Length: 490
Image (tube, rainbow, N blue to C red; front, side):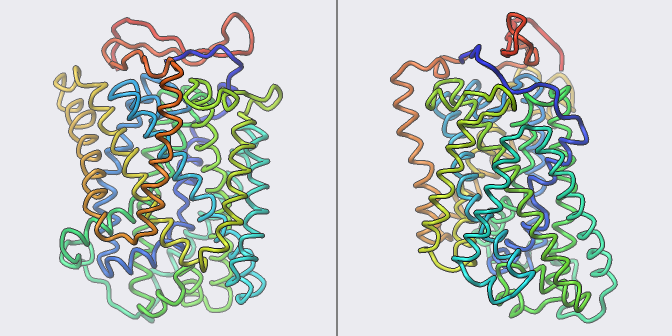
């Protein structure tokens, strides 16, 4: 894999607290609950809390895989680099491309609710307009694009404000929901079992949607080149992020099933949280939760931009995509070409999205398509961790469970729900999911034929590889990653 000697990202900008905030914001608690609960309930009904629970277990295995791989390879491309250096460069590129496509799709699926939530603060009828929602959402997207362009430090400061307000509002309404007495259903512990799933295929479709809930915490790995003590910090932040959002997802999904009727959930599929807010705090509740969802959506647009631009930066640096994507701005230390390209592509998709239907229709198909792509790159990363640490798995019970068994289980689970859900998804969701991944074959084979060093990688082996964080090369500002063939302990 190429060690590009060009100017690199700014090192040591983010600390542990910053990366934990980014991990939680990446999963977008309020947005995920608002936009995805109706889709999940529609797929599995009262089994929705169980789908989130049983998806959290393998998801922690994937988070462990990211954590362990991040210790031995600090790279903004994350799974793109790790999978390419352990399994095969083609699989590595597909892994990175799946992330790029899923994040790009999300920028449309996420910007539409950002626009509709903003409009809903003033007029509920305006929020139903796809055209107006697209316009306002595009404005929020451009603002976040400028924030990301301004560098990691500005990005995380904006994130702390937005996510801080969001989490305070969610915590308040979690308490209000617990003490709410007027309910459509009575909670039953069977909701956390397997009894409410419609067979194996039903469980798989619910788990695929649940994967979308959790998706995003791995932004910490894409920020590894800009994080202090990143080999420890990024993995820890990812694990904490998964734990925090799991609790929020379970509390609010149970609350929605208990307090709201099936009709209320179906009639407000783009934002069930607003309806929940009105139920537990009439008058103010709906507005406050709309604010929380709006902030969450805008915040996760920012983390999504980080993921896609850092991934494209790594690809440009390795010359598996146009090398211009690997250029970094001299003042802001951000991949400004990648940011500009993503901005243009997303704005074109915003315009095209007006022809696809209502906000709810677009969200449903996009969430399912993104779920397929998430399953691909999370599953490949889980396998990559097992391969990279394969010679160390029998050193202790901890190594075997945390480094082998759990990541492997996470990987196999992701592949399983990918296969099982194929028969349950709509034709448009399958077209978006597979078409997006297939499009990556063109640049992959093109740059392979061009002789990119990425396709002749130094194999990633935890027993032989020492990774030195990005340090100035030749005493200047440019950064490089140094690989040493020396034994080490992790």
